[in-house]
Length: 122
Image (cartoon, rainbow, N blue to C red; front, side, top):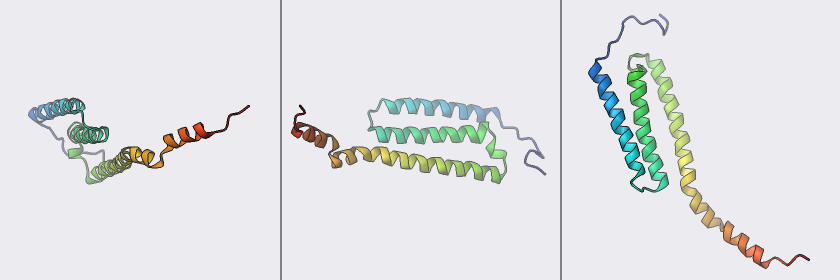
């Protein structure tokens, strides 16, 4: 039996679709609300990405019918989520540490000091 052959049809009740729809609406309101909280940028991005991940899970699980797929397809989906999470963790840690690196290197102050002590060119 191939992966496209389904032995039975799965009918999801309308109340589940409506529940997922209203959950997505609420999570969208939460995402917009987080933007008005005035959180630090790195924390705001992490919260927004967490909410977006929950929304993506709901859409893929119910509207793309991953709940009725084979475990092999679920493994591929979870593996892709793993790689996306690793990407965002490294990106967020890089963005969060840039302020400390620039302050430790004193790049801007050093250049101003060098420019003021440079000999005049004739």
